[in-house]
Length: 452
Image 1 (cartoon, rainbow, N blue to C red):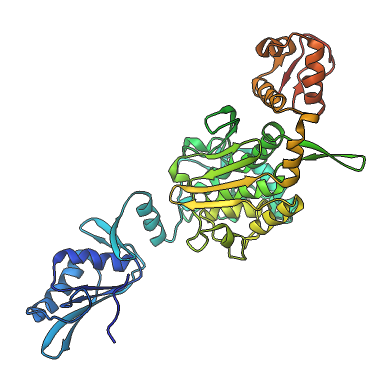
Image 2: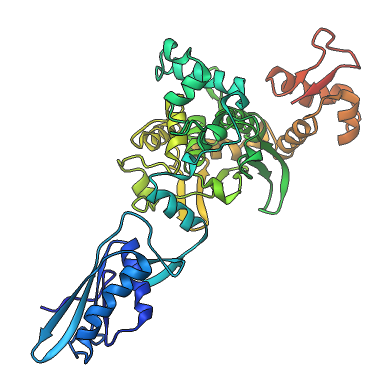
């Protein structure tokens, strides 16, 4: 029975030196077989110079690529043809200074970020495991290291004794120092005070949108060590960006958010761990009245390419394993794909829909839709709140990033009555902690300022 042509088998009527690219591509992919002297349907047509090629082709392969392929002379009746068998090679193979890869039925050149990843893989490294000779443990932010230790001990991932060692020993124990004694990229991203100095785009951008995608009402950016960015982002989204509606369970007053905070945190952590930091693009969070989008320029394993597959039981294969280990040791993420189970459980507490994942070459987009209970409250929101009022609250908080006095706030937004402004906005913002006072001992002082 004749073999069918597929990604590891190719049929050619005659030999041309450009087929060395195919051999290079097979060696870099999964191996393959090239038949010389067959038509496009695999029928043997034979070649006249089979014995000459039997000697010439192996020498070309070895001389130009440094590998060995089996070249076999085969017969069908009186017809001679060649079989070239190429094994998969553990190291990346080049042909005339270029790298090729067999994908499906096509041969393509590997370039850019893909080439960098492939080269690192052949060295047993990942992008986040590359050393950075210009920074040392003393350059890392102490507050970030202390936060890591507190979380790790609290979650039982480290003992007090393990967390109490010197920073250099801690970094080594976390496998964040390479064999030459250099800190690796994962250490810099997690603990360095300004990771953007080394990796552009290693921050989180948040925006609140109104009626359309073009209607950006206000925005923020969260910078600093990644280990600190998580809590800062979650707190910012759920105090400034997320509108909590009020429901009552009996006489108990309950704040209802559109999407459970625990589920949002897990999605954010996934974005941080799976992001392709070499892309230089920040994680982007877009908040709307009834939904949230979370995007990152990253990848999922090829077998996890849909929402359904992600929420099935699967092993954990983070894009940045060294960075993922830091977050695992801190207790902020789980191993073995448990994070998606936690997202599912959190959404269940709200009887809300699971997030929807769109995974493609441009990155990973997660859509988090509001739960039905929130949507019902939103429809009746005119009885207790109004959307314009919510937008005003958000704009006040944005305006007060730098401390502002009551007259400054009133002048900026055109409020005429100080009493009305306090009753409608200021008092509630202060009571809920969304605005903080610079002079709490003089609550009615005109010099007192407020900041978010």
